[in-house]
Image (cartoon, rainbow, N blue to C red; front, side, top):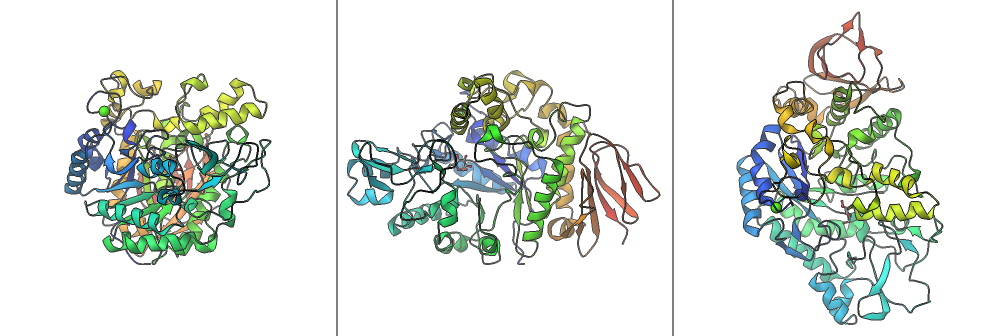
Length: 563
Ligand code: GLC
Ligand code: CA
């Protein structure tokens, strides 16, 4: 495997709207991010991905872009963006923007023009089909946010257009070479500004299975989830390679794809040495227990499931490339509220449990990607009723739950477990009003637990979650261990032992053993040899004797083994 400049870094995702508000309007902004660059450096971050800050009506919080060349005034100016790139660069941090090109906003000029003249040039930028009331739609796919993927074309009651996501996110027609050229031009324009690269949104969806046709319904609404289409779509890699060739490769840019449902044999084509992306996210754990019925039907994830999914991803990428390891992002609940059993965070060993989960994920082979707030152990929030929920996908799921016969209270249980708002509440900087996020009224309420969970309280506490993450990033950056931590092979240790997740990282210079006691009770773990050094421990004690570790509840350690 070829070595790349970004392999040894630790990456961090910023959701700008909720990170830091510099001007008191309740919305996080680019000046807020600039103010926190030293913070990111202190945490050991080398790459930062910003969720979208382009001009947008924010129907899907910026994933609906109305001008790819402009910064939304709510986030700042182009000058701020350029300053951010420059200032981050001075601190050794590369800036990665979100590339959202499966769709744009219905307020983008292209779509406006398509509405004016669907038979003209811009009509070909989208998927527009003839349709009269009472006739069946061109196909029965259900949008990812609920409801049909077809909506009436504004101003034309004899036409509909395709949107796999929200109706304010019309899908761009990648089959049209002119659309692709426009997109590549825009990407290069940004890379010329000194961006380190892009996180590439929803990209697997750009290739549609054409001609449009129905698939067997998977719910009572008679629709079939849009991702069914992905199994039938052929040729996405042709588009992606063309894009890489016309843009990223010329710049040596870093790219991370948001790819679900790739076909196993395609993995090297995505992230191998000649792949179309640098890397992609490992969603192996994220998709566990997904249910076609929706959130309300999803079962909690067990430690065993989590472990197996991680190991499977490690196995399949070992010789191919790097995945990005995450426990959460802006589309998912907080990792500690999801992968730890209910009640664990609030329990007496909550801090240890959070560190264990974070440590197990961080030490896997690949690029660790922290999501803002993860480093202080932020948890899910709670909404009493659907009116309090901002997330568009949660509204769709709520409706689906009611349609399946659940009561509003039951439907809210699913929403509270999975709503994307869970990860989008403002960053908890300190215990002052609004957690120090804003001097105004935050666009989304702060999680009420901010008095207990905040950065200021954790900074000076050597046992805090935050200082634990700092130890992890420091180990990754330590020249004596970096080769092993970054490239060492992963080999599961005692994989059949229930509620134990342990693995070796084998490098040329040393072998590390990573151990997590994934339960709220003690467990005796035989050690495979003599321990040379305990590099990281989430607890004060390391009770090993006679080759056995008497691991305390949620104990986590990284051990350097005697050769
Ligand atoms: C991706 C984004 C998500 C967005 C969707 C549509 O999944 O991460 O936030 O809603 O794409 O752009
Ligand atoms: Ca602001």
